[in-house]
Image (tube, rainbow, N blue to C red; front, side, top):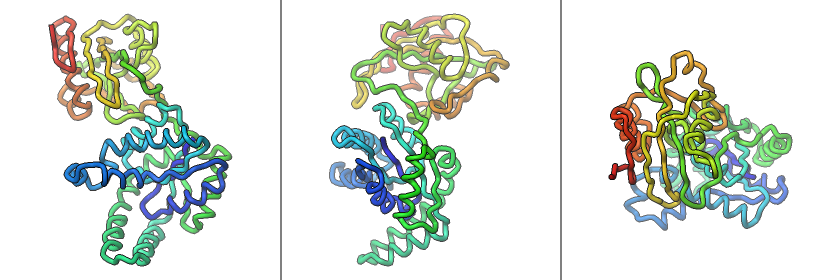
Length: 345
């Protein structure tokens, strides 16, 4: 299990985490800031300078998941992780990766009053020996208070909030420990299938509205929008897998087996293994049917019908290429065979 302590810079995450490991039996502290520091040594300088925050590096997000999983495999018990996460898509990616490894996350956010938070940041800077460096750090932390406040909308629904405005780190840790023990800080609802150990077969379904737009869904467990669908289970017909995923994800039972539009071979790209990706035409949903779309909160955050142009802003490039060829196949009434997004044969 992981207890993830979120909060603005200066909210007291790390000091609370240090106290918390003494209150939760068999717990270990893991600070992802260390992983960010390693990347300063590992990455070419040019690549590191391309981003202001190491969280914007995909390799950092992957390494956080891998490191947490490796630590838990080594020491077991509970991992206490103090780390600010205000980009919901980054939280989705990291927590989704942990869920894929069957690692439960209890998400806690510290919410001191803004005036107290700013005073703490200023006080910490005043105690530093390097005045110039301390001032840069102080301004950096102050600049990130407002983005954190803006993120509270989704954090309030996702995490157990602890107002530690007038609590010491030890007192805050006691509140967090009790919330975890009592189940108030419940397991995060993100779910994910186990990570593949080899190539996979996946089936997606395109569903159209009466304006010929198609449906995309926004998963909670990974960045980017997606077609309804998922991995085909062993012994399961691919088209039936697509129908099952549509029913599970959005509550729509398809009346007939969808028609195949394309088969795309996705090349292995570490850490992924690639495999075959199938897209099916699930037909048109009448407006009354579309109004009945249901979203399981643990897996999907939202849905929308979009045009091909709109999809280019939402889908990752590999899925957008697949979509474009699927739409061409639908127009021509044919089936296309793709290799890494390029038609062959």
